[in-house]
Length: 285
Image (cartoon, rainbow, N blue to C red; front, side):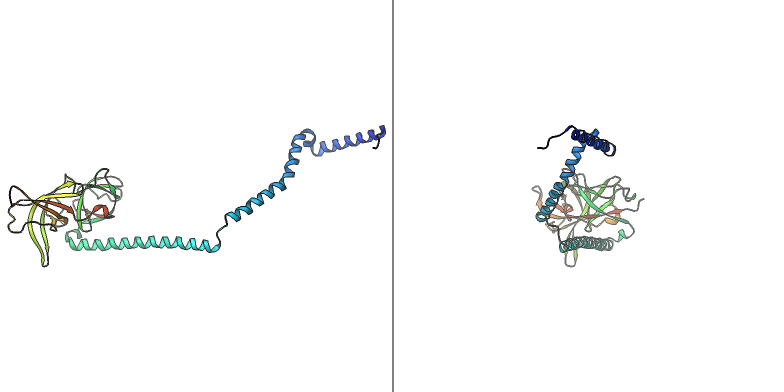
């Protein structure tokens, strides 16, 4: 081992002092903050290690979760456009059905040719009751929508508007117990229809049903299941008079007299299966 003479110690101390002076001038962090300098040196040493681990993780993700190739992306895009085309075709079909039904309503109800009509969708039914429904049309959509407007579905009368809000309106269906109207009972026949009772009193029974007590003097042709109930009430707009409101489903003869019947009537249209209706904007405005 080489021995250090006083002269060598002297020159080594001078060299160390010179190096310290240079470092303090060019990199003061080494002299004044040696801890930070060491930290930076450690971080620099760990950069290659971190890069190696990152590269390994990316490679592993590519193996475990391969990216879809160009064929998969094209297939997904094709399915997206097919879905959109199917949706648009369904909407066109629905609009064609609405236009066709509008023409049929005008043909079957000549009085509606001079009355305005507005299409509406059924939003839902009142909580706990199937005898009220909500439509997606209000006075903001058409200020002519008013309480008392008749509502048709599939060319059959189903109810009347009882309240109008800004974006919706409420319809009381003919099956509600507070609904009462005068109607006629007819029987479809090959050459037309047979009048069974030109004037009977129909009322709502609730839960989607109606009832009727026909006249006692009907003669030889009593009502029977399958007979139709037609509106014949001057309290309704003239444009909808004659509209079908129901069909007889059950006939009970009164125990008191053989000439009296109790009729159970079902609506001609199942409102819960209907998507859109027509609001008849009567000409009183």
